[in-house]
Image (cartoon, rainbow, N blue to C red; front, side, top):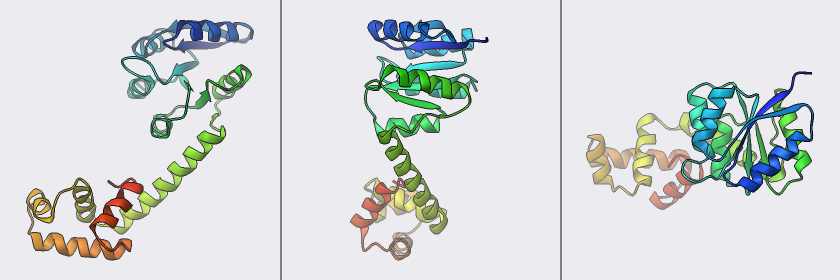
Length: 213
């Protein structure tokens, strides 16, 4: 039987010991490397070409997201399971965008990590934990709304929304875009009409909530 080759990355030696022992109890797995940093994780993946990387999200120095970015840039074929103590929605969503195939909370039963790695190795995804599902649902809704906004607003209007959200006044926006202050006011009026907001404060709040700012 061809074994599932795994690299383990966590900055806590006790956690690494526990993970290694956990996978050693299952004959289908082979731990080919265990490392304490994100940099070492990327190197171990390059050196060993494992089937799955079990990666801690929070590590000193570069974190798990950095490792995911590096692996994505190198077009690594290794599937990644993210191991985290808690769900930070922003980091989780970034990890999903970077192609992470599984997310397991450290508080979950060890058998679920085994099941997750099996599923990920088979080409599936393991993101059905309730908190993860909620975060994914919010991400999809935001991205759907952002897509609608990008279709609704012109490129120049989007520029103006983003500059206004940075706190720039009309005169400063005009200078930045090399247009007149009157033109900025006309654009803002059109933006308010399209988005159904009544002023600058509502626009900034709306843009921030929808990921446009």
